[in-house]
Image (cartoon, rainbow, N blue to C red; front, side):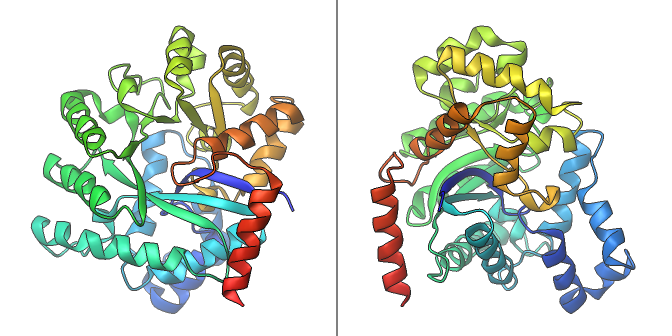
Length: 343
C-alpha cells in the first residue's frame, strides 16, 4: 500500500459534502432546508468561486457547526476517509481555534475556551481505529485582532502534544496593513521554538517578501515561481518547502488552467526548492490527495519521478514526522505497532 503525507488541509474545508449534509439533516435542519436537496447543496458547496475571498466565505458555513460537541463527529469521518481512501500515514490539520468557540461569549472568554477546542481535536484525531500520525497547525487570522492572534501563538506553545506549528490565514491579500504586527507574531513564535508556515504568495495581491524569512514552509507560494523567480534561490538556501494545492487555484479563480502550474514545478525543481502536493480543502473540492497526484500527471505537469520527489518532500518537511524520510521498513513498523495497539 502506498502511504502519503498531507501537510496542508484545513479542518473547515476537510468535511466532504455528504458528511456535512447528513449532519445538517440530523442536527441543523434549518441549514438543510435552505438548500432543499442534497444535489443543490453539493453544487453550491463545491462549485468554483470568482475570488479567494468569495471562496473563503464557505469556511464560515462549516466553522459555525464545528463546536466542541460536534468536532469528534467530523474528525472521525475525516480520519476514516483519509485512511481508507487516501492511504495517509501522516496528516496535519490546520484551523483557527477561536472560530470554533461560542460567538455569544466575550473575547476573553473565547480565548479561554480555545484550549478546550485543541484538546477535543487532538483526542478525536488520535483515535486508534485509523492509525494515522496526526498533528495540528493553529492559524492566526487576518480578521482577528492582535490579542487573539498572540493568544493563538501562546496556545500552540502550551499544547505541543497536539500542535506542531502556527500559520497565518484569512486571505493573503489582507495582510499588508498589518505586516509589522504579523512579523512580530512570527518572531514571537520562533522565540518559543514553534514551527511556522503561512499563507503567502497564493494570489498576486499576497506577495510579502518581508514575511518569508520567518516561515519554515510556505502555504501555497505559487506566485514566487510564477512572478518572482528571483526569490527561489533564497528559498532553496533556507530549505523552505512550498505547500502547493492544485485544485484550490481553479476553485478560487487564481489560475484559469491547471497547466499553468507546470511553470511552478519546473522552476522549483530547477532551483532546488521542494514542493509538497496537498489538498487544502478536500471537502470543498470533493477531491482527495491521490486525485491531485493523478491530475498533475495526466496534464503532463510532472512525471512519476517528480511525483515521488514531491511525496518524499512531504515527509521530509512534515513538522511532526520523526523520521524525516519514508522507507517502507519504517512505515511498516509504525503501522504494525499501531495495529497491534488497536487489537
